Image (cartoon, rainbow, N blue to C red; front, side, top):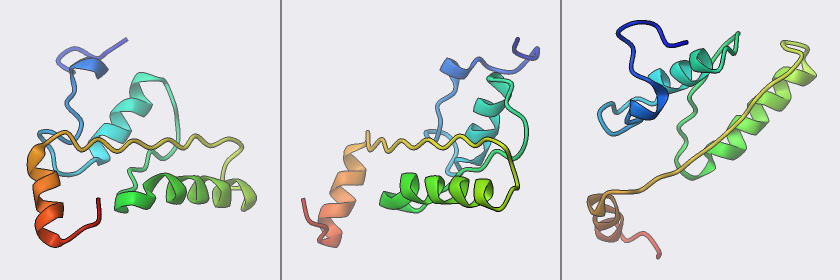
Length: 91
């Protein structure tokens, strides 16, 4: 159930209108009924690895009984690729 006035998950453009991914992480947790901290990790290419490492550490330290880690990297704008090319990033 989505609260009145809140967009449904598929209506949210994560990252397209907001430079910070944190609201998206909280929204995904809310929609799926997940409780506890909802973190957005932004470390460029290593985001998935860092998210899994944080989840693993939380489990080992007994901070939680279960953890969920996920990652996605969508470079949909040609401007992003052009910026990387100007910076001399490898293909």
